[in-house]
Image (cartoon, rainbow, N blue to C red):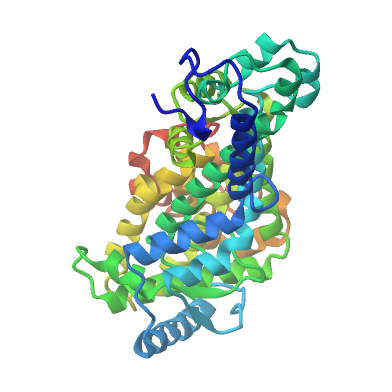
Amino acid sequence: MSIPFGFSPQGSGDGPFNMNNLGQALQQLGQMMQSAQSGEGPVNWNIVEDVARKAVVAAGDPSITEGQREAARSAVNLADLWLDEATSFPAAGGGCEVWSRSEWLVNTGPAWQRIVTPIAEHVNGAVAGLTPSGQDIAQMSSEDITAALPEQFRQMLPEGMPPEFLQMLQPMMGMVQQLGAAAFSMQVGQALSALAGQVLCASDIGIPLTDPPKVAVLPSNIAEFSEGLEIASSDALMYVALREAAHQRLFVHVPWLAARVLGAVEQYAQYMKVDSERLGDVMGDVDMTDPAALQQVLSQGLLQPEDTPEQKAAVARLEALLACIEGWVDDVVQQASGDRLPASGALIEAMRRRRAAGGPAERTFSTLVGMELRPRLLREAHTVFAAVRSARGADARDALWSHPDLLPGPDDLADPLGFAQATGQVPDTLEGIDELGDEANDDPTNDDPTNDDPTNDDA
């Protein structure tokens, strides 16, 4: 049997202990630790960026042509003209950026660091909890120290190792956490590369990913989105430009919104926990010296929300806020496109189904961080904004964003028309209000059974 670091198997007859073997083992252990943790913090962002960029290039990342840039900028300029008639929020300004998939990774990287780091801290803490700390080791017997090591490390040690040398095993314990961080970083890189292959614009997932907000589209992904819909790619580009420009108007002219969304995501992450019992079970069969094997473990969905009132409230607040953003954008874009974009009906339906079902990239990301990116309660939020606009106009609808307390919360979205009427924005005798509610209930996102529970544990 071959044992790592040049040791002979226990009981092989080569002697109970060899100082040279120990020195070689510690030297190679140090090299492994250095390669596993070349960065600081719970996520090695050098590894994330390297893995993500290589995966994007391998999957295909066409360079942006000058024709694509011109078409995207023209679409955004036209979208701003249409949106001027549909919302009181002026254009975001700053022009339009046209990104490749790699450029999306670079430009949204800082936001992902803020989102992922709190979750990574939970993962690292759970991995570290599988081994004793340095203080614990100082109080443990040789037998207890050896028993606390993962099986792969235990096999590295020769028989008869003196107790004073066992006290030097703390670096080996620390390597478990460092390798866990490296494995998690690889997994984040792969998840972000998968998202880079699907997102259509900077605001596609509803969370502000640029600071300051900027209008940006990904022509290659938009072209793939339009395939199979029997819709011209130019129509799909126009529709995405409308949605992106509307999102960024909201993020620019509602100054508290971006910070509140990211704050809600961070609060959600605070209440995540790792299934330590399951982690311990699967770790027993994993080669702890192999980051790829650890990566496979982390992809099995070990994160889960805590079953506490605080966590459920955090989930509900995040769901409601994301739903309000998307509900407002839906109403504004429908009013702006009107009869100008004949394919808008098919594109609206395709987009709603896309958000309801999610895609492989979203499922990969949700498994990794325990968080779904799709907004729930979307049809209810859309009903609120559409009802207020129908009764009092676009200015009254947009005024709901003047303060966070004016927006519907999780409980309010359980009865969207009732909320709109209770605020005085919508009269009880509003003509067509029943049809408005029926139209919202026809939203294809209603096919998602998880929409029925506003406090569902997946945000």
